[in-house]
Amino acid sequence: MSEPRLLTEIIPDQVLPKVLRTFDLVAVYVFIIFFVSGASIIAGGGWASMSMWIIGFAVFLVPAAFAVLELAGLWPAQGGVYVWAYRTMSERWAFLGGFLSWIPVILSGTLTPAAAVAYLSLAFGWNLSLTANIVLQLVLLWACVGFALRKLRLSQNVANGVFVFYALLVAAVFAAGLTVTLGNGAPAVPVADLVTVDFGTYGWIFGIVLLYLVGVETPFNMGAEFTQGSSAKRMVWAGSVALAVGYLLATAGVLLSTPADRIDPVTGVARVFGQLGAPWLQSVAAVGIALISLTAFTVYQSAYSRLVFVSGLEKHLPRLFTHLNARTRNPVTALLIQGAISSVAVVILYSQQSLTTVFLSLQGALTVLWLASGYFFLVPVIIARFKYADRYANETFWRIPGGRTVAIAVSAVGILATTAGIYYTFTLPFSSDIATGTWMLNLTVICGVTMVVAGLVYVFGRRSAARLSEDQRLAHLATLGTEGTPQ
Image (cartoon, rainbow, N blue to C red; front, side):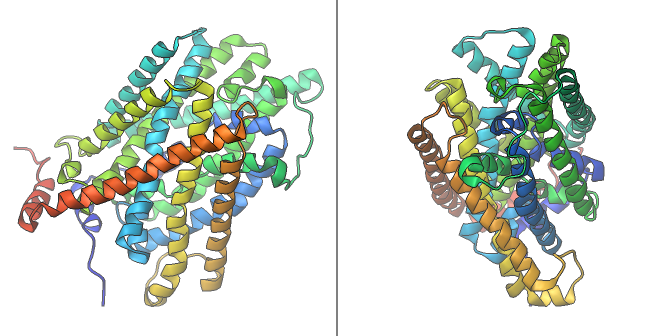
């Protein structure tokens, strides 16, 4: 007997426009996962970072890609990880998985504007005070939220254009690094430990690598807005190849051009052109990366607002969060609340410690929390293979080749890599300038507060939803399909 369908499997498909084509989805996939600035901090580990990238691709990116494609074939609905965890685990675990998958947009709201300000400061020679820095971060943050409130098709057209520039920029970074090396007769960072599995020394790089590979599941938050279900496979395969090549080229560009003691963990990629002796190109690249980062954050806002919308549909949040703008069909309340929470976090966090310490600590916490969300699409593959064996036997959809044994092995590899990434991130600071005790305390506080908030949202969200009668709820849901109808 078939299971009753969730509202998130019904309502979004009826009220949200299907506007995301294959190229759109590849761009979304890359914007969500690929951050060229990540090459700057990872290059700080020297040439060993190349081994860590390859290992990360093999033990995390590939298993994650396989897992989400299989689950998306079973349940191709809006909400992605929430639906997958709900069907295989329970409603409470589904909420936690959805929350952990959503919280990165808040932490990214504290990271992306800060990185953009750093790049703009490099380009224009600014030396901003702490107050001016925070104010500019808030302005940029809300500019992204405002753009995300526009029609998804419009913002996606802009993202597609920036995506092409992104590819050209990465190629230029590698070419600049290669030119510097040829001019000097040797790489700026001497080649050592190019092939290594020394996690005791380089485990911190592995943790960061996984941070810059998480997010494979995120585009499926917008599953009801895909024009074709078959686009999912092309998105994952083409997007994964693009980001793997991009990360290797950008990291190599930094290592080829910049001495180890001069690699800036935030703006190192743009500074490659400074090493080339072309400061004007450095400024152009810095402005370009700032714009790319802000465009990516806009895509983030749109993708993650769908999880808040789903939480409203499934009664984890008040029905206010299911409100769609009549013209753009975007979840307005979700986008605004994401911006508001990120704004508060920016003001509180960046007022307490040095910008660099806060920036790296937030990256560490983001790594731990986002990696933890991976359990909610890796474990469900194993459960689904047993719980829904009849569907595997009788239905046609993409699944991990090789049968149940191979599927379990692939998921287990992903689970072990995720656990290792969390461990190394928590125990090894991203910078030698941060004491281990300070690092672990910062991550404990940020992650602890996040989990407390998750518990409060769950409890009070359910209480709020319980005060709404079923008739009132059905009446509100009926309006979702007509809010955008012209009068």
